[in-house]
Length: 257
Image (cartoon, rainbow, N blue to C red; front, side, top):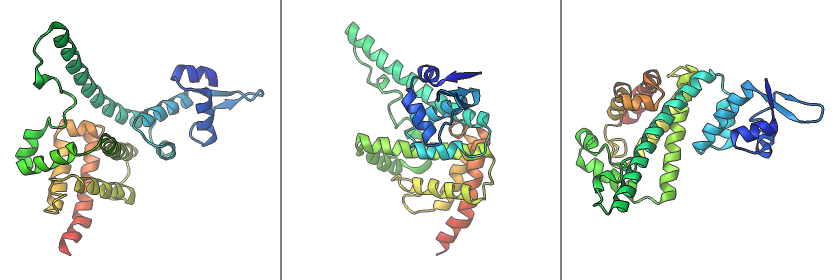
């Protein structure tokens, strides 16, 4: 079965012009073109378009989306990894909605606002106690001050960077590449660089970075919250293994210098 470009534009909430642009840059080729020049799209093209729109929602530029989609991988596994991320966002947004709705109810009824309930889903400090237990109160205070000192644009850029890293990890895991290979090790290097940019962490303090990275890798697998972040236990295991190889080779060499 095929759909016309106008049908797909209407169903997907986009425009024919956008779909033609996707085709012109090699991102979404039509499955057939009629004698009249009209483009048509089959089910395979629809799946690809769904993935394009999902990745666009993460803020990824079109050239990077094309690179991701052109990698040899199972579309089902790639979508499963994305669903895991969407479920996390669904939970966060559901908590935000409940918080705002409770505020509206309180305002309408002239009730006293409950400050502790107003920012569920907004607050990056929800893991404060856990962070302080693992790395100390000073580590939390430094990272908290760093986050609060950011502008809205800087926070958005940081979140986009984190989302891209997570997406690249889940994509690599879904393709089953070698954790010790060049591609996975490039991801591990990006991951460590990302960690060193967060004030208050052992990585940022240039302390025992190797032990910190190894410990985080194990936590990604052991903690279901982090495992879901990387598409499940298997995905988290891939991240852990790649970080372990990087830590044992690259970080050990740096500490020895």
